[in-house]
Length: 161
Image (cartoon, rainbow, N blue to C red; front, side, top):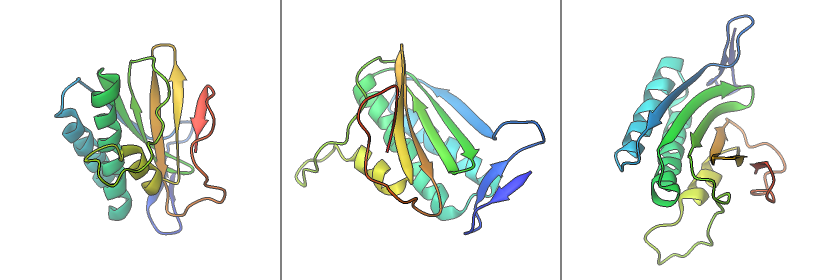
């Protein structure tokens, strides 16, 4: 089964009885991992015929999330790209059991620190799923913004914006 959004980008590819399509890649704690994450998202989008604008946004989101793992969690990570009923999902899983990340207040003079604002601006919804040994920050990119988009919710096992 193939499902397309109203704007024509791929939402789901499923065989009867299967789950959503997904690809993942384990990446080391290395600055080149952000580039590898972009390449994974780009090739996945090309293979699945995802709309170019959605692909560009997903590529940037993956890069920002992997950069956050490298800078803050300082662990290897797993990047997963999947299609769901709600859109294209990018997951970046780290192995540092720290607190869920929060967007920083915008400082126009800072050279860095805008990664989660970028993720928030480009995604229909994003959040954090906590594990005993780390967390996964994920974002779903869809063709339309769902109603009620208001920001990251208060801490819990699965945080969602």
